[in-house]
Image 1 (cartoon, rainbow, N blue to C red):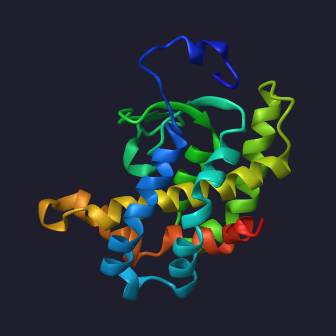
Image 2: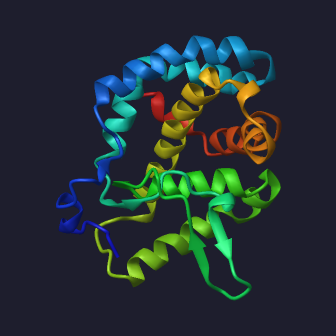
Length: 207
């Protein structure tokens, strides 16, 4: 695997997931008002408040998450980017966002976008436990289950920030088919927002 692999620093084409923290923070702050103006009435009140609460501390949230061990991450992991062939094998496609960064980004993206809320609530704890057990089985010795869960919650906040920037600026008239359906699903299905709320991610902002 690529967990803490020193080769991650040798690939000139492999970007750092976090990038420039100040620029990332500024971009989020610019995106908040357009996002809320467009979607406010369709958001849970808790999410509306969290979007605002994240504004002054988003940089610190990202800074804490990038202290996690680095690995190779996809950054857009969901079922539409996984191909199944009828066996137990799966092929992950669409690697245009490949980066080096915390594994919790892919974990949070996949669980929040690929499972309906009832299924996720019934399986999330077990899936996180099994994920951590597999890390240990593959030789990871310096990453506790508690740290994984904290990083998972931090990753949800970072994904929320990305969604704010995306849904605040996307031109829905230019989308069609599956792309339009996926975009609307973030608001209409409420899968992601319920994941954020169920995991009490906003409590991490009370520093």
